[in-house]
Amino acid sequence: MRNLKLASAGVFAFSVLTGLIAPGTASAALVTGNATFTIDNPAVVSSNPGGWFFETHWGPNDNALPIDGATGGGTALTSTSGSEVLVFPVNTNIATVTLSTTGAGRIAQATTMDAGNTAVGQIGLSGALRMRNPGMTTYLAPFDLAVSKSAGEWSINSHDNSFGTVGLFKLANVSESLNGNGELLLSGDLLWTGGLSYGGLLNANTSIVLGSFNLAPAAVPVPAAVWLFGSGLLGLLSVARGKMTLAA
Image 1 (cartoon, rainbow, N blue to C red):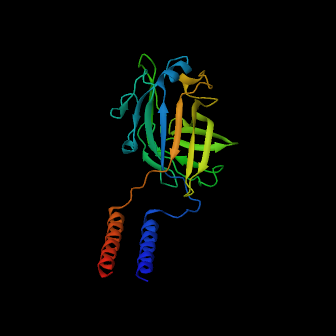
Image 2: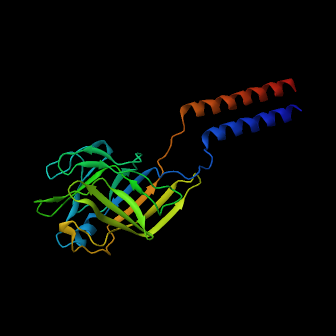
Image 3: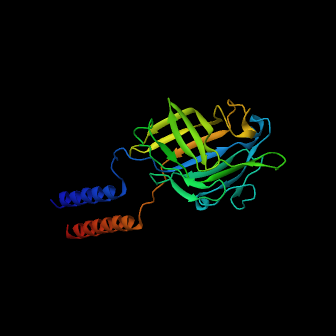
């Protein structure tokens, strides 16, 4: 009987602990997480006649920063860097938000795509890029990005007050799935989209792989309180087992 009680207590403790740590399967919800771009600048340079490359990346803390040729800060990239990893968190706003009206402006693109129905809506991303030509005499600034799917093809567009919506990338060799929590997992190769309207990229080669794209849920750390609770339960079980051993 004592062994049965101890076993029952152990099962209860394990059930409570795993219930606190492991979330149940979630119903379909808006896409969340981080989009990671791995940019191969030598491939970017070779893909366009002007030799344009990605020169600077700004993260979400600079979402309201107007981007032009003189804007400082951010992370500097070089035309010879072959594996630049750039993270763009998914926006949580469900409507576009104007962050700045200076210059080309900054607009936080909305996230309206349901992870279970990717044919509708878009995924807004936080961050900005700037491109330069070899002489560093002018610039292109694709920022306030949004990811969407049309007719089965994934694309990544830039948005600003000067140009409006501008096509930038498309994804090839795409892998799209849901994890056990119903969250979207999306990856693929980055290529220039067809019909580029950025002046310096009008004749870019749209079949050269420029890098890779990966969208995944952000890691959620287990709260310290859960670990303390679990440790306490295991400690109580150890004490109970010790008392039963002495009693025997």
